[in-house]
Length: 259
Image (cartoon, rainbow, N blue to C red; front, side):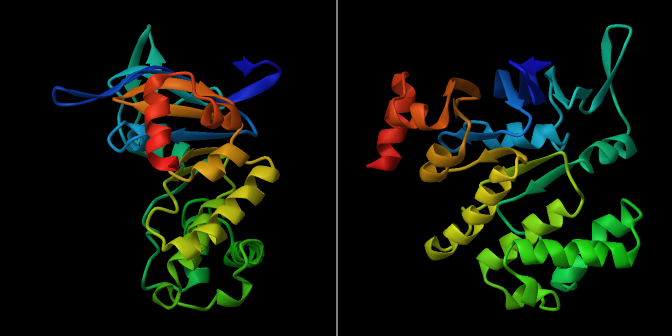
């Protein structure tokens, strides 16, 4: 599937997710083109983080389908019906998708270098030497070349989040998912994480980002989707949607956080 001449990296089609009687996602349709940045914005509880977690099958959808690079996620289609794949197969799919959470989730008992090389060595079977060389290069890219032997507790929140980004990139993912990566940071540390994300965008990394950073969404996002009550209320180019939203619900939200 393509968007114009650009292949689609993530395709959501009529995606529903329920918790008991509560519909958290209600028929989501969205395409994330390869090499683009898509930001999901909207009020808390609107379904943004849930949608992100469905891409990795960390949350199981109740209806619809999600494809990454043309591959159906979490399920196999047989005789016109979807059958859930094994956890081993789901783990293989997750290995191609980097994810950065609100909390940094670094292993406290491993150094920065140890955190980054863990998955490439254990999951992808890379040699320790190869994994370390990649890790040091990534640390240099995120401005932490001197922190390879530090422990997570010795780092600021911003530094820990940059390590978390480097750790995700070490798996050489097809795309990156960010779930409010700056929300747990002190305000003065937000910029250092966003600058790393801007560089990734400039390099053509496909990114799906849940964020409250409207400046980032306006300047960096190729498209922004405003979500509320489990639905995409409005979507469009980042600068255009944030500057001139068409829907009243979007205008109300943006006026409440931009004023």
